Length: 139
Image (tube, rainbow, N blue to C red; front, side, top):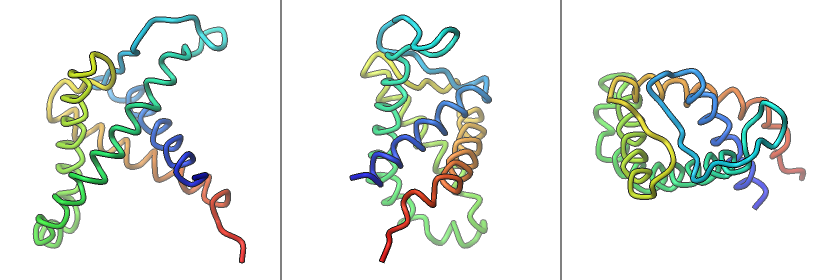
């Protein structure tokens, strides 16, 4: 359970960094609220990041794995660069789900999705490397 919560927090932080860095990505909170700290995000925005990270994790775990299995030869031919296209498509799918919910992550077009997928992957990897000692199991 701890690993799941930590992974959810890592994904939401990576998502926040991607939205902050990439101008084509926007996050719309489900409601407007008071900031948690002065000049910081509201509780609604933080909960929106956590919920969208959960939605992205579910979509990535179910649909993303199916796409990776089917597209395995393309991964070999492109030396893994097709993963950026797959992750961008998954971000666009999260945008579709966010549109149904009325809040969440919105991507302008496919090219911003590719850049957002790159930033999301790199920031998630870096944050995961920093937090890796927390999830090591002791034997």
